[in-house]
Amino acid sequence: MRILRLSLAEGARAARGVAVVIDVFRAFTCEPVMYACGAKRILLEGDVERCFAWKDRALLVGERDEVPIDGFDLTNSPSQILARGSALFAGRTVVHRTTAGVTGALAALAHADAVFLASYITARATVAAIRARNPAVVSIVAMGIRAQAPAPEDERCGDYIEALLSGDAYDHLAAVVEILRQETAQKFLRGDKAYLPREDPALCLQRDLFDFALEARQTADGVEAVRVLPDGTPFRSEDAATLPR
Image (tube, rainbow, N blue to C red; front, side, top):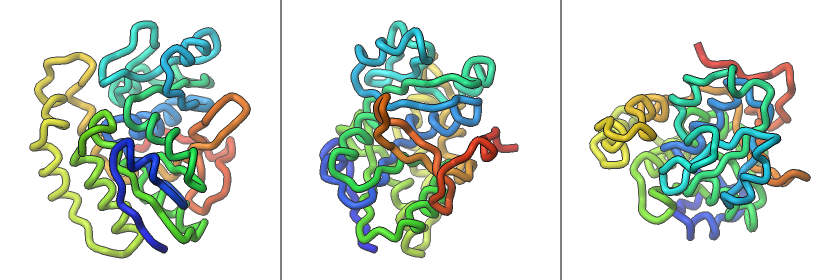
């Protein structure tokens, strides 16, 4: 297995083989949490106007350059998703739009054989699902800040996924200390913007909370974030995600 390390929008476009698109703060932390809150399915959409075409049939969740989008039901925050919980999400379709993670996954899907949507909370399950496919090439893509500048949380999560794939060492405590010192975390911890809650980094930096991976797959309705079990088999209704305890 050959592992390629890529970053940002150009990295997503260059991904080949099995792509692992990483967005820790916060797209691909939010999606497992939405499933844990009872969402039926999650569709990925990069175009804001096309999102609104779903307004009467789905929840709209996301952001544009981190800022909430007028007319959406919720912004891209795992703590705010948890606060609304099953009362909002149970049985619902979600259309998810983000500047880095979602757009990167859609770009990668154009050329890669498969695209997984990763963050710390699904990293180990993602690696297990990749191993089940035994690919020749794995492209690890850290999406970074608005897909334009490197973000330490995505790069370090990439390190973790690479270490799980290769058997190399990884120091999560050192990674967390590094991440929390950087502006990508500090902008949450200052607590001066309601759409950047202080609680989000603590949720996003937890490892391996869920035992399923997320794979972007083309469906009749668009690209869906589909749950995949660690052995590579499809997720079934009896495997329904619950919040970790």
